Image (cartoon, rainbow, N blue to C red; front, side, top):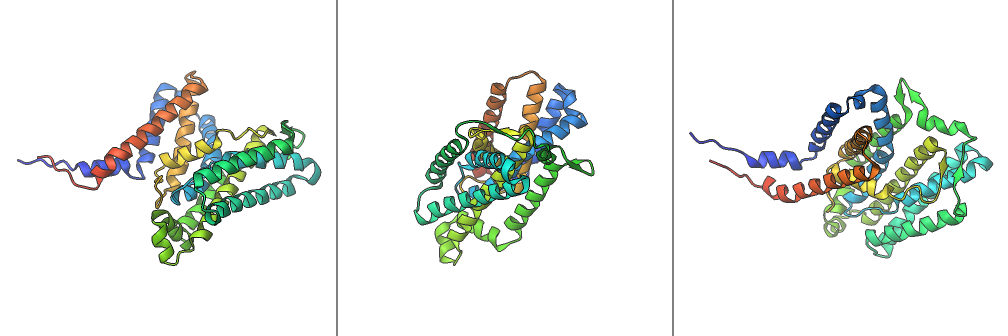
Length: 325
């Protein structure tokens, strides 16, 4: 009797976009066994709130990576937005300071898009240069000193507030995800975005406004970074020009782990959000077990390498049927 094992199905599952959900569940189950306190309602609440910072920026980064590039300036943009808000709140109030910070984010995203589309500079170089520029602007703006809003406790509502028992950062993340998902899946913008990321030359020949799509994508990325900055400032009530030093890599990590292709053309917003939650589960679990931040970063890095390696070797296998008799 012949027994057929469809290796292609297994490979498709592992390299598929929904595998991140299974991996997240496995990671949570593992830490639940090793550190049962991670299952407490307060621990889960902390994980979701912490994940919201990276998840929001990850949603924006998904647009940039779908184009076949990425935005290295989001960390500096997040830091600059917190500095702008912290410095302006005493003079103009919280609402106007937040509005100005988002205006700055739009300008930064616009500049990124224009540099890439008009000057024909690769996204890596363009956004790296923008990161350096923004960091310099933030240092000049703050005088190299930290800025705080401890006396403005109303800012904490974004971090500690809740609606129907659900933390406000989690609600904000859900709203951002739904908006981004609508743009990505239900609008022409998303279709054009994937087309431009898959084959820019063919997209141009098909009358896709590639330059406008690119500019819009980087504006979205900058705005989501600014929103993450708002939540960060509301949590710690103090900031500096270096607060977002590793934030860009964190955002890129969750997007890649979530199933968005680095080569462009396809992305998975839900995967980016779940990957952000998974990373926070790992960090929280290792902290409970007594491991340092260095070990946490090492583990996350190894998981990223393993994920990319699996996709590299299993994707070709997923495209053809292997039959073992």
